[in-house]
Image 1 (tube, rainbow over the protein chains, first blue to last red):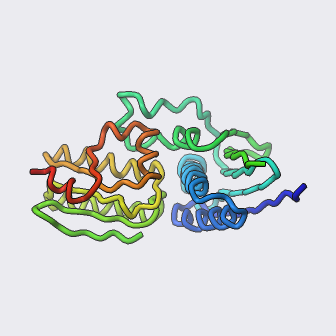
Image 2 (image 1 turned 90 degrees about the vertical axis):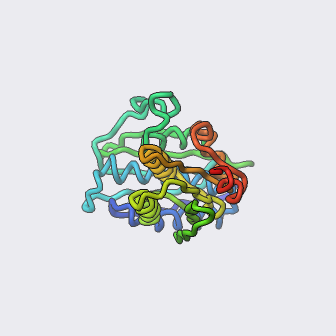
Image 3 (image 1 turned 180 degrees about the vertical axis):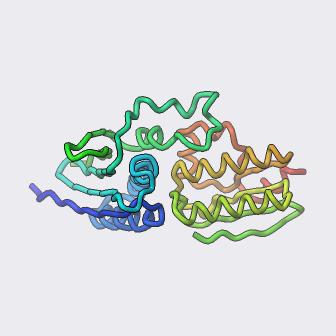
Amino acid sequence: MSENKSYRLEIPSSQNHLAEADRFLEGHLKQHGIDQDSIADLAISATELINNAIIHGNKSNPDKIVTIELEFTDKHLSISITDQGPGFKPEDIPSPISDENILKEAGRGIFIVRSLVDDLQVEEPPEGGTRMIIIKKLAS
Amino acid sequence: MSISTHEKDGVVILEPEGKIMGGPEATELRNRLYELISANNKKVVIDLGHVEWMNSTGLGILISGMTSLRNNEGELKLSSISEKVANLFEITKLNNVFESYDSTDDAVGSFG
């Protein structure tokens, strides 16, 4: 049995730090032997959630941080994105593929994440904010 | 991200390169597109062959560019979409919204 490994990065609530978060994630995923196709799907998904955390969660307030945590276990990897905002309900987001929404500029992020990863969980940490957790199963 | 621009047969071709995830690179693409529209260009192709991947921010910029051009009696077409980006278009059903071509030459030729 291999030991669990975890990594953590905190960024200010600015999209200028997205590339830093992407390098952090892609670097560790590559280091753990994740295939390039899966790395891209996970990076797309994580950057969607980081954008949401910065813009909708923390309202781009530079005094608030977004925490990104990556954990590898024997059976899966998880990427957690935690903001310091008021929380939201993903089920309230209208379908972006309906005729009335298809040409809207925004509103596809969560839909895309759900399509690309094995599971997406939402938690409300006791200290406040929202934690979105991407789960990807690993081949045993 | 680097974005090169050139013109062929009266069609402006934008070639973004890298990832479009929502940071300064996305702002640059959005601004470049709006500069073209403001300058009254009506035929625009975005060659996505060198875009490694994009997220919904990139899709939003493309939709915004397409609708702005249409409102200005222009047209935006896409070319050389990579497998990863094509997958995103299929997931979001935007493959039914954008006109896309295998090559930039085909996209330019389609304007007639």
